[in-house]
Structures are given as structure tokens and as C-alpha cells.
Length: 160
Figure 1 (tube, helix red, strand yellow):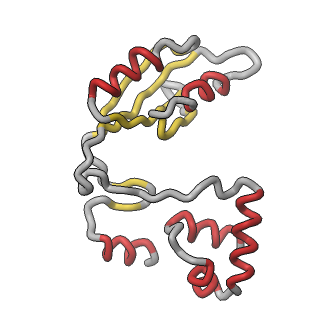
Figure 2: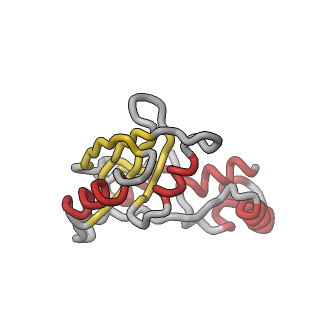
């Protein structure tokens, strides 16, 4: 039951307890109690709304930055990662396998704003030995939501 509720909420956090209960054949109280339990356990970390800022008329530049790091004794990558994710510009941060150790996703108003972040903040952190910045030109899909379809089609696609 818990996993099913989590999967449903991950797809659409706007659903009410009553809607989820109807989908799973549970009572509203059971759903509410399970969600509260998941929040206490740290399984639900937050609820997000995905916005297509291009359609909203706001221009943002999103960049994927690969970061090479020298791991620190006793902490590995954790201390450097914690330092990086403290920056407000950082939307996501992942430890990766491959040529680079970390992947950072950031957004800014301009290319210059993003490049300034990389050159003056990110690359100057002790332990960061290199970066490679890739600018995202167009989003087609994010968090299982396609950006190219109409909202009515999105709902049909999510629950099929």
C-alpha cells in the first residue's frame, strides 16, 4: 500500500487523499495516515510543481555541469557535495560514475549568470579539479512530464 501511494504522489502530488483512496480501494483515513507516516520517515521530501517557464514567458538558462572532484579522506565526495548544494542556484546534484564525479543542474537568467557561477563559485571550491558545462537548449520531458503535449494529453498519459 505504501509504495503504491508513493508512486501515485510522485506522478501527481495534487491528488487528494480521497482521490488516492478511490484509486487504491482504501479509506481516506488510511491514505492520510500513510502519507503522514511517509513524511515522518523522510520518504516524502517535498511536493513540487513542474512549470514550463518558456510558455509562461520567463526566460531561464539551465545548465548541466559535470564536476571532477578529489575525494576527501574520511568524507569521500560528501563534504564537497554539501558545499555545492548549499548554493541557491543549484537545483539538483548527483554523484555519478564515469569521467566526472558530480553532476550539477543550475538555472540562471542569462548565460553570463550561469558562467559566473561556474567560474567564481563552483570551480574555486577546494577539491574541484575540473568542470564541463552543457547548456540545455530545450526540455522535451522532465520528471515523466512531456513538455510538448497539451495538459489534457498529459493527464491521460500519466494514468494509462
